[in-house]
Length: 125
Image 1: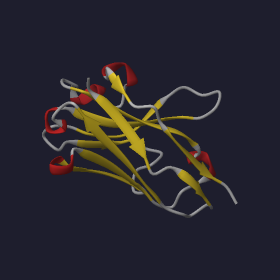
Image 2: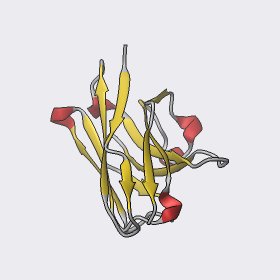
Image 3: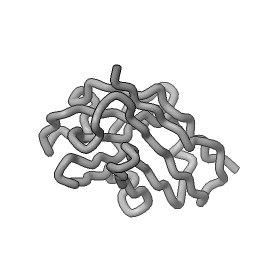
Image 4: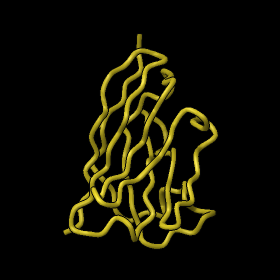
């Protein structure tokens, strides 16, 4: 059974940094598009950053220049480096994966069929 497991969340002050990790078990990560999404209380789940099989990356405007998505195929892991964190980045962060995600849909949650359980990120002074 394929599973995604996120880790690395925590509580940091504004301006701080965190690195989230997403590890897949039961499948070869190199063959799928992987996205990071987040959901704050009372809000819709939104796409944050994605990296596709061909290394195409896309970021939401709200995180562009602050977040970086990367991959380590040997470790079957995808990372989300988050710098200059703001209180509005506070949310549950989820990793998602799917085999065929068109470029114009990479930040759409409906394009992904496999999800992790999430890791909480809190940015507060």
